[in-house]
Length: 323
Image (cartoon, rainbow, N blue to C red; front, side, top):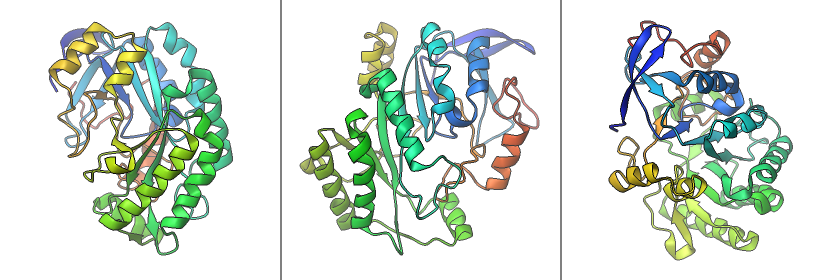
């Protein structure tokens, strides 16, 4: 993505930087839950430094001078909530994609608060921001030796019966078992996932559609090739240009960006997100979710978390930074 360029003053002197309008925080780790202090320090400084996950010696300076929107991804945004007034004061608009699964019995998400606590956080955040800016994700949908379609729908129902009145929509995604990180993490946990075939995908989606109709909220699939429109399920845009334009009062700079580049060229096949700049980092989340694709080894993530400096320019400092 060819973002606008600028020059910024960093601790190492003047540096070239990109100046994106839309920030993603973050697909690669849970910044609201784990690194909210670092994020605020970077917003106050006006820039952050990002490490290329595929070439850790390559880094990039990211200026926030043109930033208009932040999209937050989180399983526990409670630690960030105290900073939201300051984010607003800085002229930044934002919304949350809040992953709220119920895999407590299966112990698939050992490092996050209880389901009851997370549902209360969801409701509190929605009351604060309005439900349009709090998107409920049940992601990923998982089948195991002991958890089938009906059991999984029961879990979604139990969560939705409480939080659906506070959710802008329900977004779901089927687990991608082919990811190597998913396979290795599941083997370590002794869990065998079952693949969704086309029939079980449709069965699952039909059940979700019925639930959402009862709750009166839309349902959408994330990065899914299968057309589920006959069930009333749309293809989602997690980085949603329409919502971003709405909360930024139809910002002309963002509108021009989306007219020029309507979809992010750096995302996987099937993703319909508009362009955004990622500022997170893989192998930094300590939630320990067994199905995680963003953590190669939890020990590495824990080490990086323990070594993390909230005053650093980087979420984690590479061995030989070049930015």
